[in-house]
Length: 189
Image 1 (cartoon, rainbow, N blue to C red):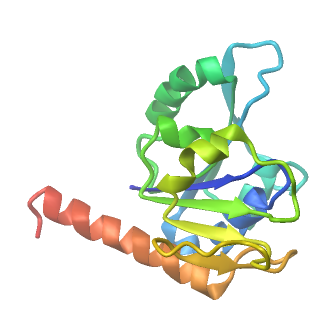
Image 2: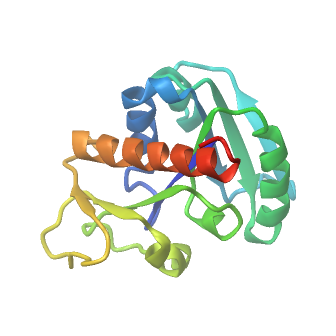
C-alpha cells in the first residue's frame, strides 16, 4: 500500500482539488481517500465514512473523482495521534491511500508528500512551516515571487486546474518505486 499525503500552507489553496485530480488521473490505484480536519464539533476526535458522490463536500468530491472509499477524520491537535492510530486500523486492506492533511505527516509516514502553496495567500500555518522540509515536491499556483528549491521539484499549476501530467507522472513513479521497495523488502524479488 502506498500512502500519498497532500498538505498545504493554509485553507483554500487547492489541496482538495489536487487530491480529487490525482484520484481521477490514477484510477488504477483504487484509492481510499482521507480528509483530516481540525474542527471536532464537540468531540475529542472522530472518523466517519462518506458514501455521497454528489461532489458537494470534500470527501464526496473524492468519491466523485473515483475513490473506492472516503473517510473524514476530525481531530484537534491534542487528539490527532489517537485519531491516526484508529485510522491506520481502518485502512487495513486498502490498496492505496491518499490523505489531505498537513499535520498528519507528524504521525503517518507517507511514501509521497506534496505541499500546495499559493503565494497570493498571506496565510501560512505553522503546521505547514514545520513540515515543508519533508515535502517531496511543491505544487505552486504561481511561481512568480517564489524561491525555487534546489532539492525538490516544484510544479506550477494554474487554477482551476491543480493537477498537471507532470504531477501525475511524479506521483505514479513514486508509487511504483514504493511497490518495488516493498517487493524487495519481503524477499519476493
